[in-house]
Length: 278
Length: 325
Image (tube, rainbow over all chains, first blue to last red; front, side, top):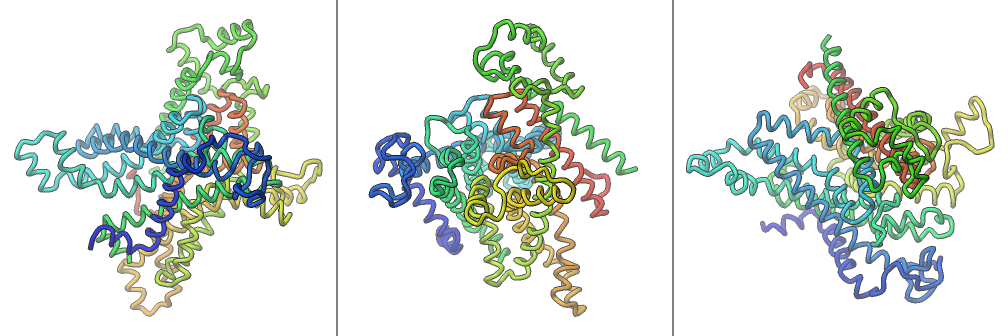
């Protein structure tokens, strides 16, 4: 069975993929459909959905187009989710690989370090980091990466520990390959599938984290994001429910889609496990 | 004796972690934009120069970095978290005043999510091939993907604004001055919305975990034995599978403590619940870094205490695990 056929067997994953493609399309089309800045006042404020043609989702407290904000926000959410996950992988994969491959004291030290980061409450740490570094896309990405790399390190470490004494690794060692080559060329490629699955789930968590940070007013003041839209509309929820409702649905759908895709990837990449689960 | 040594070991580890957090906090203050004295004063902008000079002297900011670090660490070791100039109160007093509210909220949400999650998860495990089982799991996935602060807002919209069943914010009715049981009932009434929205996300996690854990336990030999003995399915599910499946959930619950703190920050912000989460939001709004870092340290300490607690519960629940950590 092909990879995609295995993926598509999980109906939820297929639905997730379709939603995800739609959201990516939103992000790509945003500058074409709404070339104006989503921060610009374009109509009178507090316009309910469908009240005026061309403003299907209404306007916010400052007369900004909610639909435009939603589309531009998609781009920011996906970007921050992807980049922060990549940074978390860049931190976590080498640490986990070294700990798992060498074991012993190195492993002990690196794992204590990882545990330290796992003990600290994630979201509180992210808040403190962004507040100190001042809110910007860079500081948000860094903060999310710093709080989300430990699971990666633990996963990669466990994989390396189970693979480091396999026959093909012994063989590589016998033909004189160095440690770096064995880690990068022999073991790492074999740990990729669980990493990919974890990464897709991490993008979802990162998007949730980013929205929560922006909701608290720690978003980049120059980019429109879903969390900011909800945070800004919080105090007027009695007058204008749509201002918080639509961005929240957007976050919910995106995170849900990524989780579904992650499960589908898990099934497709680990067919044996998937069969056992059924 | 084993427990005494274990607790001593865990406490030693906890002290090291807390020490590292203090050092980390210290360097964060150094990194923050602007004059550290201004930050300690809770003032982001320009202030009275004479006042800043006094502060610099008071906090020893004219000293070399390692002296400053020592002063900072020994200050916190003697429970001196500094002063919040914005709130005109010592940071410790501010935090301690808000702590009970947070403990009430997170404790309620924890028990609620654990009870409902285990219940829903075992239902889903018993109906693994049925539509109802899949439905529970689909719901759990949706709750898992829903932003907490958004559920909280939507709950306010539905239950406070439209239905007018429950209060939307605060911990008690302002100006009512209830006493005795009336006060307890008033607080409980205010607790329902924040606690259940906070519980929702964790309920989703426990549901998924319980189901997975129970499905794994149901493959064990003792389950086959029980079935061969002719025990009813319901009895097997409850007495044999669920009891053994609960152990990993205790471990997981300990790991979730940190997440719970994060969730509390968001729910307390939305519901104006007067706990340390709300205090953190206020500190954030006022750029009161001293208070912010104090709360950060305290929340980490809370999580560590809770972790030690779950660790002990785990060992009590499963006597097979002795000493080994």
